[in-house]
Length: 207
Image 1 (cartoon, rainbow, N blue to C red):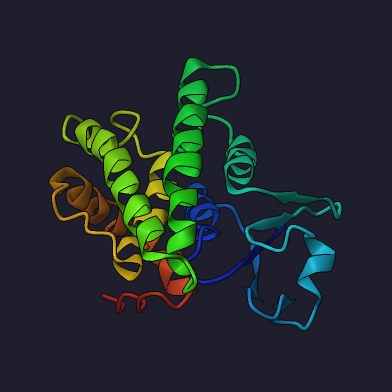
Image 2: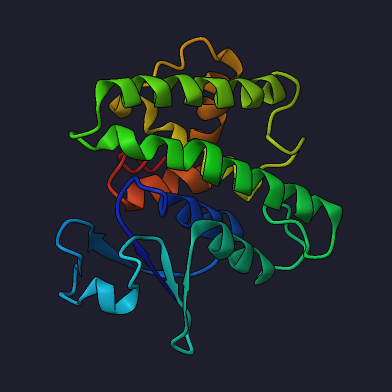
C-alpha cells in the first residue's frame, strides 16, 4: 500500500496510525501547489479531489478522506486499541470524535491559510475554534486521551490539526490540558517516527 502525503498536513494522521500499528506502507510526497507527486505523476489523476491523504491499495483501488483511511488501516490489525473493532460502541465513539475534529476543528482552519480571507472572517474562525477546543480541553483535563485511557486515531488527528494553530495565528494558550496532550502525543515513538520521516523533526540519535 502507498500513502500519498504532504509534510505536516492532515495526511500525517494516517501516517501516525500506520506507525502505531506497525503497518508497512510506501510513501509518495505530493506538491499541493503543482498537484504533482515526487515521481512526476499527475496527482489529480490519482485523486480528482486534489488533496491528501490518499491510500492506494495493493489491488489498485484508491481510498480518500483521512477518517476513512485510518479506520481501514485499523481494521487490517484486529485487536488493536488505536482503532477499536468495527461493530463495537468504542468504534462508534471513535467515529463520533473523528467527525467532530473533521468538521469543527480541521475545516475551521482552512480560511486562515488564505491570504485573501477578510480579517472579520479570520476573527470569527479563531473565536469559533477556541470555542470548539474548549470542549476537547475539558475532556483532556479528566483523562489522558480523547476516548479514555488508550491512544486512538482520534488523538492522532487532533494532534496534527492542532499543530497548525501557531502558523494560523490561533491562540490556544488558555487550554492547558490540550497543551499537555500535545506533549504526550509527540513523545510517542510512533509519532516521532512519522514526523521524522516527513522531515518535521530530526530522528532521535541511536543510544
